[in-house]
Length: 140
Image 1 (cartoon, rainbow, N blue to C red):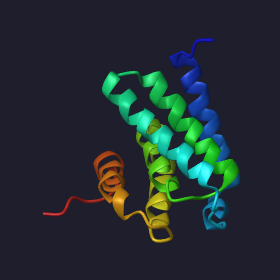
Image 2 (spheres, rainbow, N blue to C red):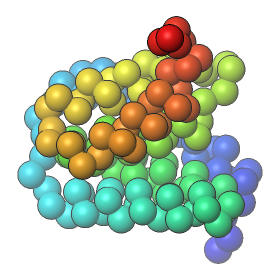
Image 3 (cartoon, rainbow, N blue to C red):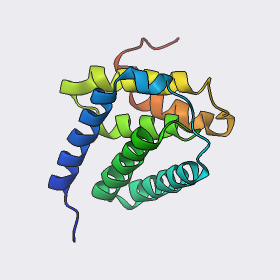
Image 4 (tube, rainbow, N blue to C red):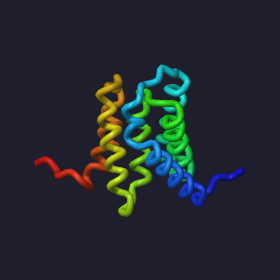
């Protein structure tokens, strides 16, 4: 079975809908100790980064959406903030920018609950370099 950009658009919409249905209360839930979730999200994040360099947008969308969906179903872990930021950076358009900014702000607030020190450069790059510049003033 092949995966096309048409399917990518549907998958993005489905994932956004799933996030909206669970709402912000999902972010206040307990963090999971599921090591399989942590490892899978880490693996998906690496695939997404490699796919960006290979310019395979459909793979970026597929693995980013799968990572977010997995986190929505299984719970929060140390990789959830980066996963959400990667998701918002690929799904942001003018018509849903405010929603994506809210998701990104929620992801950044999760960094205080987890030990994400090793992920700080990636988190900041995805938040400030891809999302926040639309909404927050630049510092001189």
